[in-house]
Amino acid sequence: MGRVTVRRPVRMLTADGERRRPDALAAEEPLELRVSGKALAVTMRTPGHDVELAHGFLLSEGVIGARADISTARYCDSVDDTGRNTYNVLDLALADGVPPPDTGVERNFYTTSSCGVCGKAALDAVKLRTRFDPSGSPFAVSTATLAGLPDALRERQRVFAATGGLHAAGLFTADGSLLAVREDVGRHNAVDKVLGWALLEGRVPLLDCGLLVSGRASFELVQKAAMAGVPLLAAVSAPSSLAVELAEENGMTLVGFLRGASMNLYTGDKRILES
Image (cartoon, rainbow, N blue to C red; front, side, top):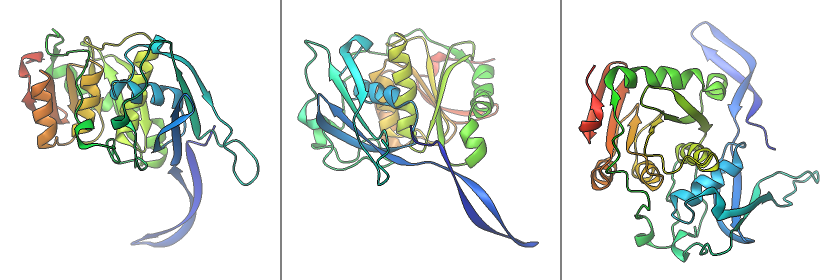
């Protein structure tokens, strides 16, 4: 498995002068996802939890809806110049009766660490319909509980503490318990990893959970949450206009600028209980 962090020498300049020291960087490596031997997508990710990432990706693309939809997941031989396996190619086999991905799911190019929908083969493949409608979920959370979540997430961002270069996503319950936290250089990968964890744990649809992300709430993150049945998405930064529209269409609650006791409620404020 690839390294999560890489140490590199750095020349540090400050008002007091300069010094040289080693610096920890967040690792970024390509991961090629294949389905039954056929290349589906390449994403730039932080190594680790790759099987979760693959399951979450296929869930958020509407290919699968349960753990049983994947029969096997295995790394393929992908060697570097020294002959060592890089573990950067993962092949998944669908269970009998599960249709293969539509051509619209295929990426013509690689997916960068900042874009979760880049390279889609067709424009109409960007917007997907969820099989787990979150609109009727009774999930609700208090403002006091929401206010404590960013700090709780940060405490579990071990790689971010070392590098300052990773996004995080966490699933939480109504009482503010964080069920799982995942980090990655790509915000969409962090979400795929945590949704993949939930799928493998048999918790999808996630109608009784919220999703917290450490950055902004973009269109693709709202869509991924909707595809897993998540009724509430909270972000510490701003949402985009399309993210708000998509959350409203799916009957989801969208919270932005979650910083301490301050937060903006963009949609679905019925799920936010004032403390």
